[in-house]
Length: 312
Image (cartoon, rainbow, N blue to C red; front, side, top):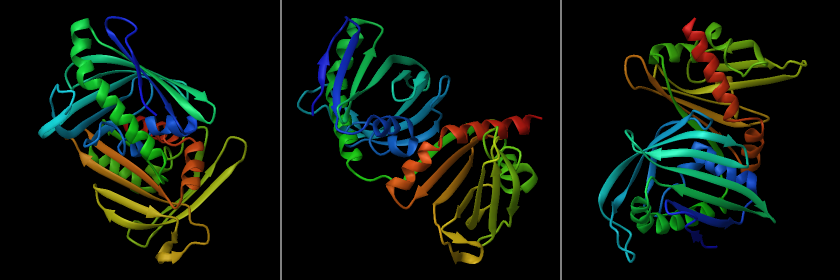
């Protein structure tokens, strides 16, 4: 499919695009870091995320890596490799319906975007409106935003035709890396925050070394339970944890493998830590089931609980 481009007002550009994929998959591709990083930006561009939290007041801070930009309809993207700082600040997030955000560099807001998601037959209609401060800025932006949007949507369509198995998010937390590490690796510190309330962790075992056990039993408000026994694969203090329930402690095979988790920590400053969490699944169906359980929303709630605990 191709873009339908209109100009509803002197300061606006509107893109309409039909995507041959269900609205749930298209929404997730727009709101999950592990998916966005695989298609966002025109052909030849890639993404490094510094922080991502898709909720009102949250933000996506990233560097877009790619060639320079020339205002040339025959070659809109050319030139030496360049890194472009980007900061998206989410204003409205209505699941499978609407995203509204401001978009700029790390210092200034340059324009605003509203994307409407509409189910259309077996696919999804995306209606995206870009609003700039002046008509002059809109005309200058259109020279590369129009071909750039078309290229980006082609990448999205190609990505959605491929299976995807990963969920992920990145956040910058207002706490030193040592405290974040302990909250993930000390039993009495992990239990108060590890699942979003009203669920709670009632039992926990942490044997912190490769091959060691990581066990949690979670209980819901109506007596529901979720039990998970995993095996640590990588333990790099204050840097990286990887564990999987595809293996049991001592690397014994699991009868019911589900997923593998990775948590990476990076000290942004003495008082801030960048946390990147990834969950990898064996197939798309399992990944979809995990997403329906509330990832990453549930994880963000849990991380908020972690930070609240550290503030006490």
